[in-house]
Image 1 (tube, rainbow, N blue to C red):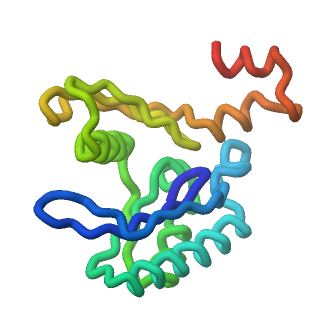
Image 2 (cartoon, rainbow, N blue to C red):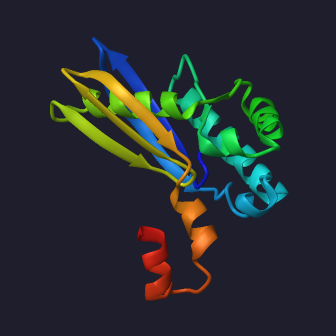
Length: 174
């Protein structure tokens, strides 16, 4: 459950290999207005509650024995994140966990390595609420950091017109 998107992965793990059975994602835009209010909107909470309930049903129908739900930057940043976690638990029967930025980077790195990424590896994972940077050698993470500069945060801070002006694009990239 992220600042922009709520994603699904149902997978089978055999001999250390992950085989996806189902994947999906829904743009839930939980970070909308977060910079101004510090809170996830009621509409956002309701939408994520419905989406995670549907995803949990799909995972169980595919035979999932374990379900893990993780929240990224929106769970770290929103003052009403406890309400988000409570609604997720009520909708799914699963306790969601808020990942630290460093843990988010560790998991992204592990996913890249499992998918056969090059070695050594330096990678960036830009989300809606944060940017994770990480690197490692021989499949082992040696450093990771998380910065609070995600796409939604930058857009809400700098973009006031649609389409963005050249000056707006420069403000985001400079």
